Amino acid sequence: MSPITARSVSDLDFGAVTGRPLTPSPSAWEDEVLYFLLVDRFSDGREAGYLDLSGQVVPGATPAFEPADAGSAITSETHAAAWRAAGVGWAGGTVAGIKSKLGYLRRLGVTALWISPLLKQAHTPAGAATSYHGYAIQDFLSVDPHFGSNDELADLVAAAHAAGLRVILDVVLNHVGDVFAYDLSDPARYPSADPADPAVDPRWDGHPYPVKGWREGDGSLAAFTAEAAAAQWPDGAVFPAELHPPQTFSREGHIVNWDYPPEYLNGDFAGLKDVTHGAGAVDDYLPSPALKALTRAYCWWIAFADLDGFRLDTVKHLDRGATRFFTSVVHEFAQSIGKDRFFLVGEITGSRGDAIATMELTGLDAALGLADVQQQLAGAAAGRSDPSGYFALFRNSELIGKDSQTWLRNTVVTSYDDHDQVWKGPNKARFCADPDGLTLATAVLALNAASLGIPCIYYGSEQGLDGSGAGPYADRYIREAMFGGEFGPFRSRGRHVFDEGNQLYVRLAAVLRLRAAEPAMRRGRQYLRQISADGLRFALPWEAGQVPGILAWSRILADRELLCAINTDPAQPREVWATIDDQLHRTGEFLTLLHASSTADVGPAAQIPAARIPVEDRNGRAARLVIPPGAFAVYG
Image 1 (tube, rainbow, N blue to C red):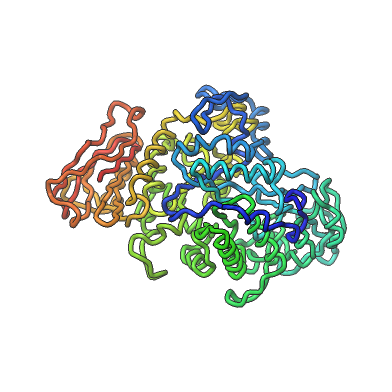
Image 2 (image 1 turned 30 degrees about the vertical axis):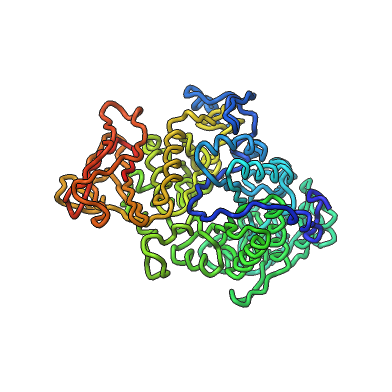
């Protein structure tokens, strides 16, 4: 049966998708650089003047953004309200649009695309699918038509592989979209029985709610039975058909306390409906039919689209046994078709210790959102927090016995901006929204790319996107559409930002070229270095009282040391001595400048890092660095 018409996992023809050569996994995921994009907000393929894969200029309808376009969509409150409203609906990005920008991405230096969920989204009570972000799935066997088709996804992955890029798909296992409605008319539970009454709220209380019916495609309700669900294909209820039995769902109402285990494990994400995955201890977990069906469906997507990895959403809210079942089945299936290192990275919020234990126990390859990686990384690069906090995240400890100073090298995905920014609460803002954000953008991108972990770039960071805002649905402000449309970048409309001449794009591309060329920057041990302003008194950066100032660290692989440094001061150059490894260097030898970010836009006071610097006897051995404001330099 054709994939687009499959209604059940049993309809999927595995023989048709596995009986062909498929792309093997990379040798080491720490060598990769990820780029996370929201499909709806990245590209619609209609931009004018961008460069294709071969570097040729492509004509199109949407002009390139110019500085004068900033704020053009919010010149009056009426226009601003319309721009804000556009941010909560579909913007128009497509799978074909991503394919059109593979040249842009390859020349930037990223090697793997992490794309947001793109399976068919549930319709709302009003009868329209508004979940542009992709996390409210109604049909796990079809690509949402807003994004394209199943075949277009396969075409994108094939083209990405031909261009040397991997593709990781964001997948959802914890919940489905708002595919049924609770019955809130029970007078014993809700005396007013008035849906408009704020007290009539299906919040989690540990007891299942009765269900009023499946949501049909037009917003009406059908009986909550498996037979009625089957009749709602393709736009109503939920598919595959294995999810139709009512016991598929916990039906316990939405989460209020996000830190109480029974609640966050069995409750709904607002209107999204929680799936019951099974029961039992991790070693003796009994998966539910729903978990088995969803796992089987995702295995089919691996082979159908030739995918390289999954990013598993909301791992905290899954039973560890369910996660372990999923990872085991997926890894075994991937290995059976030649993908020996199929990448499974889990979004694991919560404490560092719990996240690590979850990753180790469940078989996930890596964690995303490990403790406060984003907050610590952004704070260190901006000079707002002690960088020891960020570097300590990667140090060996009693939590788990791994090689010193390389721990988490290939098991944590690092970033500083993303589409949720949970750690910021109700006020969302990209790094570049800060007054000094653009000046320090090179520093934060370089720190992310040149420190331990698998670096991930959030779409638009290479163009300095600066979305920010507060209030209901504040996530919209950090999800600007790079291709323009009604919710364009820098509060514009109808302008795109695929500018390969942008200084930030050029600088990041240069950093990523160095990362690709230097194994030590990808796999080496990592040490935050002591610094000194006078060459006599050495201490770690904040201990030395130099805030903001130079942050220096080393990456060492065998006998190769790279001394990396950023200047977190956005206003003036800084000069320090930085400690280096005693055993790898001799007094009087010289370190050679391997990389320096451009200083063209930082004013006449900027100094270009020296091409060679001598190793001196200071605090053991040290080298004298002079780094311009917000700049990055590497010596080796």
